[in-house]
Length: 430
Image (cartoon, rainbow, N blue to C red; front, side):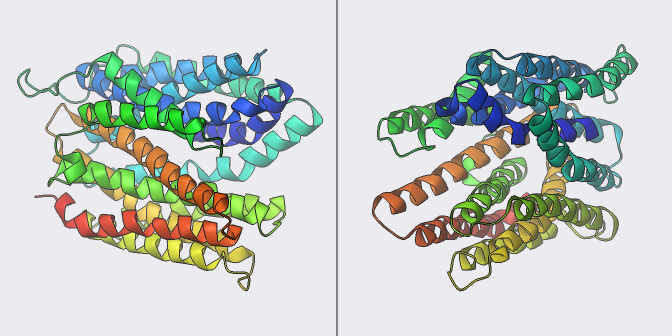
């Protein structure tokens, strides 16, 4: 998880430079959106693979694939090759995340699962501190390609060692009886959902009316195929696993929309220095990990659904702070503070929802549950960010003040926060 976090956080700051050097700036939204879209597919494949064969195989495969994708991206001769590398990286990342969560569900007793998940969050602290600045220095002094190549060199030996250790290991939990296994989703369904997510992200990335056709096509694919990858009753918040999966999407969509729009606000409206934005991202990672540690150590006896309520309320406060940060009289760092507060909410929400999903899963189906959580997390990110971006672009297109447009986009995020509070009781474990 440490190496995954380092690669994820170090690569992202170099992508704009890479797209510029490859004469593909106009396709940058596609490059940026490939990772999330592919992780949808990776999560589905990894989850059902873990249920059939154990978490070891998809984890080892994902690690080896992650190294290969860094080499593909670093050797890019066109923006399309870079996009392909990012797609494969998302595929590997989705498999790794789902495999890790499944392994925790299969191998750890329920009382230790919150602590194990907190440890996974902690693994992102050091990468958040050193990854972006080191990558920026390498890209500026040497080449953006060397960022990919050095990460591949750093990752290859640990990845091969883990793959060798996991090879041939028997699964930790017995498979579910054949009549209890979740039906294996068709590969084309997962591909269609990934394509819909990519089209949706590209469609709302600009103000060209022609791009709305891509957004409409992506939305159509998601509406038709996404429900087939989620537990029945997810979008109506049925009790148990469906409500838990729904809330993962709502909470992740809120946080990552703030993560996308707050830095944009600071750059375009407040002329904030890059160091401030870097500190905000680093602080968010630290606050997320700290809150996750608290829920795993100090609040381990608190019912998980109550922690979900607390996290959703904290996220609501973060949204309000972000909206206040759009006012001209508010200091520039006000909006940045919203990301820190939102990270505290996610530190409480994310591990609690993961534990609840494992609790609601029958034996031998933790992989399917983890895959559904990963799928809806990414769907929530894509959908909420798309809607907020559309509101922002509509406001700007109508001549509304830019600050007011950002404020409207932020206030929209109160809706998923309120839904998370409203439906939290439906995630309660028996």
